[in-house]
Length: 244
Image (spheres, one colour):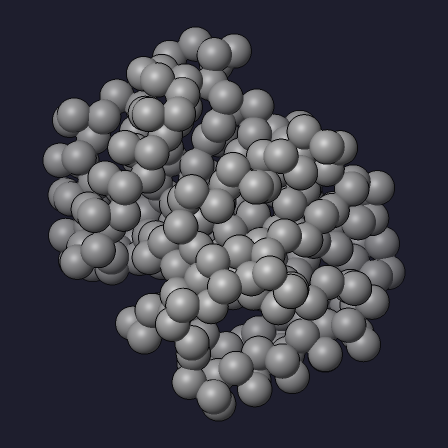
């Protein structure tokens, strides 16, 4: 594919997603093919050391989708590392990362692209803004922990946004490369570091309401990784806030 013709890159991190990555890839590919035509987009799946048949499913899908690229890690390094690899590898004029479960549907990228066209450099999906539509909610405990985590982010890092953890973020290519080349967090708190770097580099960050459906099988949960996420927040504070 000619890099100059690629309008949108979509990076999708995977880890043991064999049961759902196939339908997700079909939905994303069908949508992008209808919007951009053959060769006008690319999909980058970054497999984070899956131990199931995720890679085989992706490779089989790739036989019919020349726009698909697969990046493989030999071991599990963390979602942040997987997203970072996909974003740095992307060549599209705009670069989206989306969770493999499509909790936010790919069609929501339309609104994000409009915000880029209106002067944004980074657009972050938010489940907390007026206008967002939560179709399937999280367990109340998980929602409470998420709100607590967001308050902690505001206090420690002075990030003003209401939802840093939604797995749906769109970047101008130049911004994506500049931000992710500086990122270091491999775990689930990588979103916070990415937003902070964007702010420190002077990029315009916009927050956008999204459609969202909770997937009970999601591995991206604060309740499963509270110690790691809090430790990563402290690393971000002591590193990024001091200029390192």
